[in-house]
Image 1 (cartoon, one colour):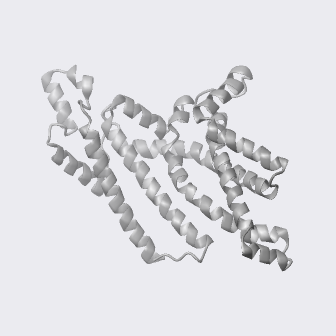
Image 2 (image 1 turned 180 degrees about the vertical axis):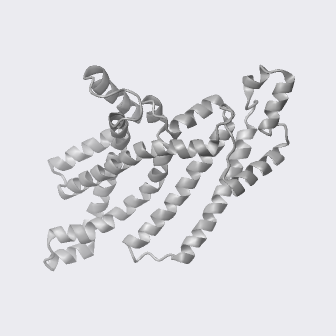
Image 3 (image 1 turned 45 degrees about the horizontal axis):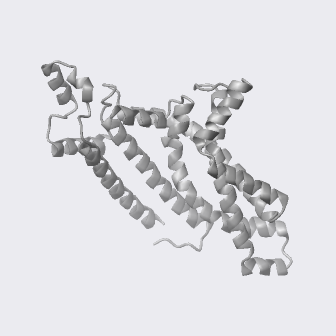
Length: 307
């Protein structure tokens, strides 16, 4: 296991290096000046100082060398072009906590409710609980998240005036964003787990256990759920990284100062350093999450051997 983990960490570092390099050069290949109109309004000397501050007066290869050196040795992603003096690294660490709270709660509730509904649907195949769960799942998949968020805002803030529309810092500010974000997760896990459980329940070893007189509860708990949940773990990889990078649409609609909010703003502002930093941060979270998922596979199913 240790050898496998070390090898995967090596692959992760290579992957992140390639992503950082590709992102850097792709962002700098976009036509136009990243400082845009801001620098053009300044006197020539001030404009030259501004470009020198961010190293934009140097050749692209030299800019890349400085960027990678600071990233590898210091973990420094530079400063925001839109907000001078604002560290990208500090912004990522600070605002990812906000996204982590919202996304984490949405993922926990979404997985818990989705798994429960999936079990109910599988154990009541072709009965009304199954139809109800599948109806909820279809709604969760087909209704876009911004439509769900708008509907929740209209009902709970405009019509009933129970919860605030936007804001951050109070428990009530979390209710609507979490509901909007977890609805799709509920639908996904309900569908996947029901399908996987029905497939596992039709396997020969389940039929053998039933023939031996093993109780239905123990069959479901010890055999069906453990094997049916394994494919669902794969989905967690992308969702874990999404917890901290934030839901761009939800954070924008509810005024949550998370990482998704900053990412959207950086694109609109052509804040290259913020875009590059956020992309690298999201990629790092994703590859780490994939490693954790692979390790979880080996723990849940010892038959899986890593080399």
